[in-house]
Length: 101
Image 1 (cartoon, rainbow, N blue to C red):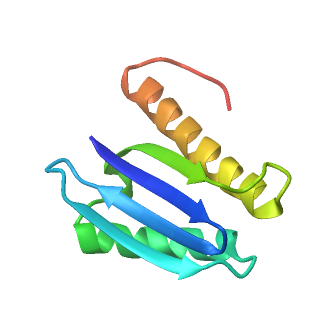
Image 2: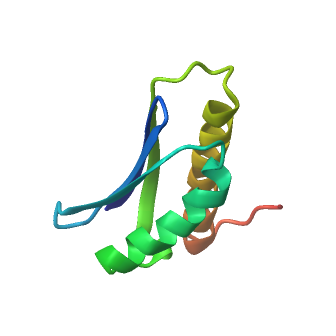
């Protein structure tokens, strides 16, 4: 099971990948109201460093100290929820379930 965690503390953003063997790879940056722009670029880099394909990721988590009213927090929640939703849909499709998008 491969997990990706997005951690936001004030302006510092940490993206970490925990592999099957328990090894953790991470990257971080200072948020300049560009979370959406940097998230997927850093996720790709993280997967390359950890030698993991994005399709192998089983869960995305979010840890944040920001209030839900902050735009960065809302964007982070949307990214994580959308990625977890896509994982569920992929799992359903692999199991032979049908669904409409």
